Image 1 (cartoon, helix red, strand yellow):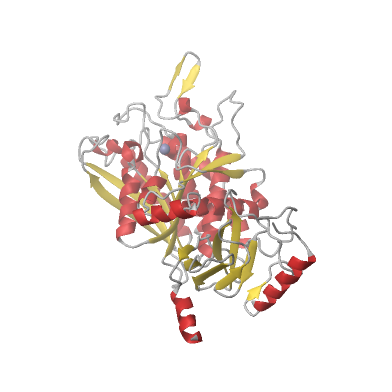
Image 2 (cartoon, rainbow, N blue to C red):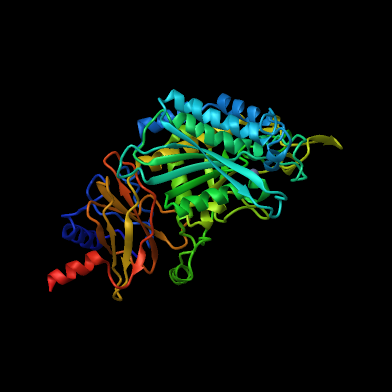
Amino acid sequence: MRHITKVTLAVSIALLMLYASAAVARNTAGQPKQGKTGSTKPAPQTRPSNKPAKDEAIIHVIRDVSPQQVQATIEKLVSFGTRNTLSVNNPGAATSSKGIVAARNWIKSEFERYSAACGGCLEVKTDTFIEQPKGRVTTPTEIQNVYAILRGTDPAQAKRIYLVTGHYDSRRQDVMNTTDPAPGANDDGSGTAVSLECARVLSKHRFPATIIFLTVAGEEQGLFGSAHFAKMAKEQGWAIEGALNNDIVGGNRTPGDTLQNNNWVRVFSEGIPAAATEAELNRIRSVGGENDSSSRQLARYIVEVSQTYSSFGPFSPKMIFRRDRYLRGGDHSSFNQQGFAAVRFTEYREDYHHQHENPRTEKGIEYGDLPKFVDFNYVANVARLNAATLATMASSPAPPAKAQLMTRELENDSKIEWAPSPGAVAYEVLWRRTTDPEFPAENGSRTTDTKVDLKESKDNVIFGVRSIDAKGHMSLIVIPEPGRAGSPVLEQQRAKDK
Ligand SMILES: [Zn+2]
């Protein structure tokens, strides 16, 4: 147990002086922090300096998101009648004003329109392939993902990619029906609109790292579009550091639904990575890492972004610590399968009368995924949160690489080291109790060095490390891995000391 006593204060100050050449105390008074972990008294709330800084450009991005534009996009998508992936095989599909070909051509033209407005800043691309018969695909079917790249401006950072996606295909009860109306306003016209709106507002700005605005097809037939895209990204070595999947973010506003909460959007994230190797699973089991996948750090990041920008008002993300809802799947899983951090945004409370249903009225209930049940202001809030998160991640330095928590010897101290991150002027080591869902704001140590030696015992807490640039942008948090043999940096130092 730690108490705020003269003794601990004196010890802490002495320790601080030991490392003062590199370490920078975080609070304004330059006094060491009493962390929440293990404290019996509430920690002092003196953390103005270690909260992520607000960025004027990102405030502008948030203000620029338009509910009217979101509504226009969703209504246009619905106007294609059906966006069933198999409708590509309908006679005359290539020239028809209805069906998925017309829809994907229109999405591409929207990206091109945004690009024209920013002097060609977007690279508008398609990822087209033939899906062979399998499950809900009965004949060889062309599937096309449509996307736009806002290339990073910093050659050292542009390889880092952040991505937002939604699926533009739709379905009826009969997932094989390719001709009758399948409006898909919420599922997933709303997510497609988020991706497009992010492209529109973010293309007016430039970021050091790269952002991809993706729309995929084949989701309702079996996640085929996202699976192909994520596999391609993996094979080509794309460094996707975070993927935001928006699926059913319409904020369903069925009359009489008193349990809906339009101030909340759920953010689903996997705990144990789908792509973990047996060795990684063993490490997770051994250290209690079930709650610390890269996808979960991404979810925590989204929460922090929403807290940084009060512009969201009462609207906020609610983390759900599971991959997805019961009986359901989504495109973020395709990215998880390839080892990328990815989360799913979904409205707080879904109405199953308005998903995958044939539009009709039966016994006084109106079925169908129609625009009238979509809350365009809610979708705009989700788009604001996505855009602000993408902008913040793409403005931040890379997360610290090769972070290691030294476990060479039995000791209560926690020694953590990491490789320098280009563009970072400082780093922050955070910690939380093993039972805490988030890293508490008051538990942290800021340093300009690439190592720390902390009194918090690694046995009692979970540590995270992040990079900070000169403007206060903070990277995603990485969890240092146990480094039993010691890091190369440490080894060199030891060799020198001999
Ligand atoms: Zn969906």
